[in-house]
Length: 338
Ligand SMILES: O=C(O)CCC(=O)C(=O)O
Image (cartoon, rainbow, N blue to C red; front, side):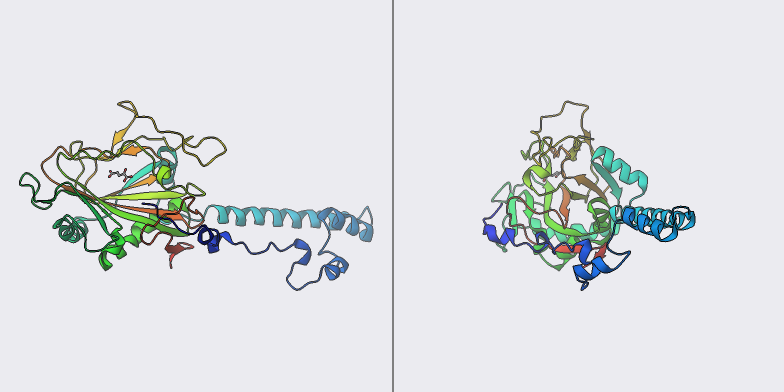
């Protein structure tokens, strides 16, 4: 639930404050503009420099001119290479094909956790399902029943179907927020500086219809850019009947009203326009913030557990204030843990 926060606090976010842009005329630092102007070769355009050297060496003296052109070319190509590197930092986990698939479809699924790891995580979920409410005021549970229901899976007698702010539960869940493999992929997708946004658990209770409708996460979590990704870890096998996430491939493209950061309204897709994410336990779906998706109903007799964690580029600033636990916590800088 978004909570009110003083507007000034938002305006004063450190990454919104920019260092003053240093003029080329005063570069390097400490050099006075006047000195720079007197210093030949520093404060003049390449064209002027060319003219000066022609004057100095004479119009017919071509080698210096060629030399300048060659130097300029080397600088230009070097600059291009450096720039490219800065714009597209090396991906650490995703291959080019995987990255292209994400760009094309707006999601990608990876097998990431083995059976032992999955069972360890499920052990940590068990106590969360034993009661319908939480002792922690900011760990918010939603349950279908106040009394145990004999018809429900015994692991989840109250039909707990959501637990919000998972990183606040204990150190295990805090560490899940920083899970290096998940973070590594997040960095490949939203850039090397990654902040947390929120974490929550979805429990698919047999037969329980939870109305969330078709949506994209960016509609709820409005930011100054769409560089947000939701990592959805399936802790049980997801079959067509067990309530898989339904995703519309490619729906992230052209989703914003042109020239704005306003998502277009989502319409209910036709059959055949969406795919169910049917995957083995331990798989993670990485979902672009604009990709249209929906949850679906579990028609089996067993509960299914899903952990969702949303990450964002550090440069994406919230448009509406929210109060998710550890929101905006810096996790990676330059791809390295903070
Ligand atoms: O639980 C799922 O499969 C998807 C959840 C979802 O759509 C959401 O919480 O935004």
